[in-house]
Each structure stands twice: as structure tokens, then as C-alpha cells.
Length: 275
Image (cartoon, rainbow, N blue to C red):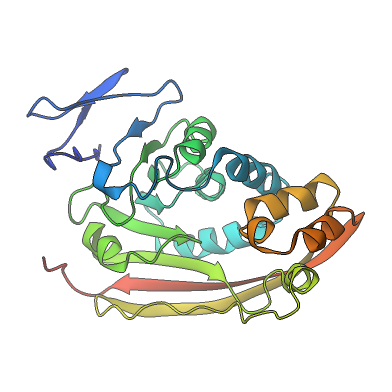
């Protein structure tokens, strides 16, 4: 079994039911939900890093409506087309664990080993409860607590582009799958909230460690009603940045027809990571 690294000295952690300890005696308690807190103080950009409890709860409830299940299925399809044997997979920026759970279901009976990290302890609590068989930790994607060449697959779904770290922890020939919102994602919501709507498209940073093996756009429609719309607003930055009167107007809509628009890129690690 693969293991986490100690965030202090970078030696492997030996896990028990209640804690994990490295050879230098650094001890980390296992939370009741099953995760470890491995975020270094220097990696914290605030007292409570990542999404707050309200945003995380809203994201959990919205995603549990399976509005983004087609995206999860496309990610699983990319993996299944390339790996018919057991894999070790990291969901970098695991959030509430929705996508990791969907991947595990799609890979049923493959005996895969799953890991997930996120800087938000509120999200990690939910992810650990949702994915009892996975190894989950609070940690930064820019300082992943794993040895070089640990994983066959790394997924990055709406997470920071820590490309060098993803390359480091991937095996040579390993697969990185990156999903992010594309031009028309939630365009109806953005038009309802802002007078001037900016282009939502982003691009992956250049990283010579990878070659692109596939790219696709996934676009479809959904309808959000009542509390679903409220959860969608709360889980996004829009609720904090948009004019309050526009936010309240959207909240009061009985239903909202929306476009989901995602870009999915699969990249293969093409060379050994160089420190």
C-alpha cells in the first residue's frame, strides 16, 4: 500500500487506526472521519484555508443532484480506455469527494487504490465520509505529501494547475486528467448577475513534462429549482462578488435553465521528473 509522507521531514508515514507516525517521531492524529491533517503552516494562506463550511455544504448538496455526473462519467471513460488493470489514483483538490466516489463506482471491482487531498478541512471531512475506502488528507496540491512516481493517474477537477507537482507524483507514462469550466459554463447565471460577462475560458499552463493525448468539450443543459439554485449560488464566488440585488433576483426564480460547459484534457507524462 502507498502511504502519505510526513509534511515535516518528508519520510513515509506508518498509519494505524488512530494515528500516523514517521521514523522521526512526528505524529498525526486520524480524525474521526478517517482523514489526516497534513497541511504545513507555510501552506496556509489564511486561518481557515480553502472553501468555507457554507460553500462546501452547498457544493455537496448541489453535486449530489448529479448535475455534473456527465463530467464524472467522461473522466471515468478516459481512465477506463487506458487502464484495464488496477491503478493508484490521486484526486488533487478532492473537494467533497463527489468525483472520486463516481470514479470508484465506474471502476468497480478493479481493486484500485484511491487518494484525495484538499486544503479545505470542511471539504475533506465530507470526502472522507463519502469515500471510506480512500486515503484522504488535508494538504496542498502545491506540496503533495507523496513520493515521486507514486500514481498511475492524477485527476484535477476545477483545482489549481500545480503541473510540476502532478508531474512529480505521477509515474512515467502516467495520466493527468484536467477538467475546468469552458466558455459557456453557467452563462445564463452569469448574465443574470452581471452587466458585462467576461469570457470564462481558461487555458492550461505549458508544462514540457506532458504531451496531450486527448481534448474534448462537454456541453449540456440542466434545470435548477429552488434550493438547488441557492446551493449553486452559494458554492460559487458569484454570491460574494455579484450585486446583491441581482443575487436575490436569481434566488427568487422558481427554476433556472443553465448550460454546463466543460473542457477535459488528458495528458501523458512523457519524461522523468527532474528536481
